[in-house]
Every structure is written in C-alpha cells, then in structure tokens.
Image 1 (cartoon, helix red, strand yellow):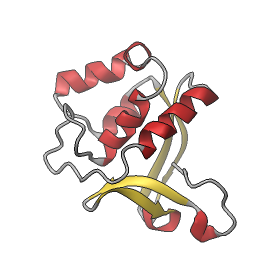
Image 2 (cartoon, rainbow, N blue to C red; image 1 turned 180 degrees about the horizontal axis):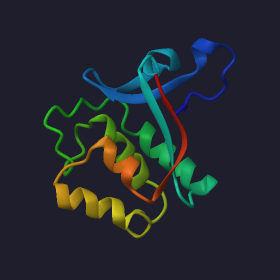
Image 3 (spheres, rainbow, N blue to C red; image 1 turned 45 degrees about the horizontal axis):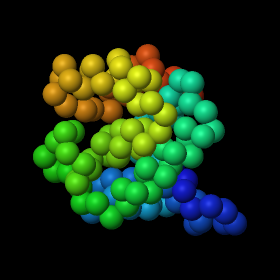
Length: 129
C-alpha cells in the first residue's frame, strides 16, 4: 500500500509491511523481490473504504512483529494481521467480511491463503516466476 503521497522518483514509492523488524515503510523493489505476487482487492470497496483502510494501516506503523501470530491481539502484527487491521478500520467489517472471519475462527489462525481463497476478495493480478 503506497501511503507516501507524491511519487517523483522510483525511491519515493514505498509501501507499508510488517516484517521481523516491525511494521514499517519499505521500498517497492525490496518488497517485490520475490517469486510470486498476487494483488487482491476486497469486493465492493469504495474510495472512502480505501481511504479509511489506509488510515488504519498508517496507524499500525511502529508496532513490533507478531512472532506468535496471535490474530486475537493487535499490539504486535504479522503481515496478514496488518492487512486485516487496515480492513477492520474501513466499512462495516463484520458485515462485509463474514466468510473471511469464519475462516479465521475455524482455523483459529490467519494465513495469506485465507485472503486468496476467500470469495470476498477478487484477484486483480497474479505473477509467478
């Protein structure tokens, strides 16, 4: 999620991620130095929903990484927990993502595959090397 405003040069395009060093900004090239990428979009999201989600994402910057992957607390975040925290700040989350929340409750966990397999998200782009 690019939350830095104007992008005048390549180095200006930074995204928010949660890694072992915590929730922070990273350059695009660092994040996408990988073998597979899938861009998902919540179905039915409005521009206002996106703005609220981005505000929720920014509010997470500086939190430590969740090495225990405890989806039921938000003082530490893993990468997928960061995405969920941003979504929870937007729209009527419980009403708009019941299937997703049911998947989390059934597994008592949150994984990247849950976003991928949930019908409440649509695949916009998928690349595999």
